[in-house]
Length: 393
Image (cartoon, rainbow, N blue to C red; front, side):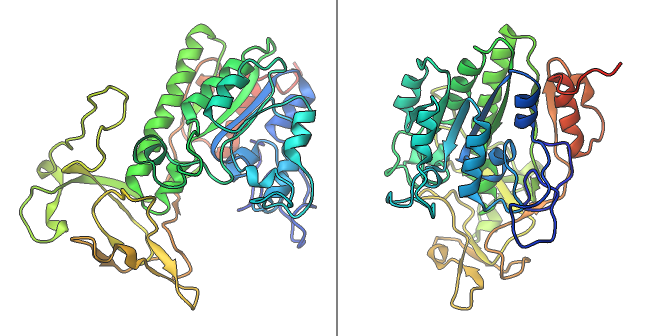
């Protein structure tokens, strides 16, 4: 988002050594560059809190990504035309139940006064498409939004409290509908946040459903590009996880231990997921022969070899000594085995890996993505395509 290397937890700054997190030298973000050089619109869409690292990176300047209340103020300074996601707790004044602010600033009211239409659920998001200003602030959860598997199928997690959340596809479509009204063009960042957030706790089915949803959101972009051929689409990740699909887990295989039911190589066979209704998602996630997915790094936890149907997986919990130990909630699941972790006991979930990520692109400027690239060079292609740098020759 800046074309510059950064430090862990830092957004839009050259990290210095002072204790204060907001006084570090700033680096211009892509949104600020667009505001400075032209009239293009800006959109930020995420299934996480909009103050989370990736959406925040579009606008933020802080040494600590945890400065979420301050990041809301940074969104207000830049004022992207479209902001959709979770994280309303940091927009509400501290007097409001559920607020995570420590002051009385009411950013909901401030955005409304600035001409934004507020949407708090799927119904209001649809209604907001008719807004005259084209500015939409959509906040659909106090924290991170629920996963596709919970939101659309299992109705677990916090879906009972937030029952009408839109998904990434609806948010992407709304953003494109609004931003494309700007004849000068636009920049839109769309994040499938819970691919990562469900890989940390090794909740593979939820992570894969998020990946399917991301694929569908990319499809929305590809359809848009058919009628708007001057559109560059870039799909990539900010990091990898140590995750591998190694075969299948087949409940019908003989053996007393669940590890006996793991099939690899030719013994794996194909998983028996079905999609009878054609929605692109498995009709059932707990089929008898399912993908076998494991992490290369983990805390102590109970491996159940099964989808977590009662809510997102919490593999480890803290004890009195603030060390993470295996969550005994899963101890008595038939076939569960205790895996002794290879991470420090200060880690409660799996961690990121340093493998290279894949980047795919199509449209004008896509030919500039080639070979091995430093992550900071991605910005150079975007700056070129968006004509952010004035011609010198």
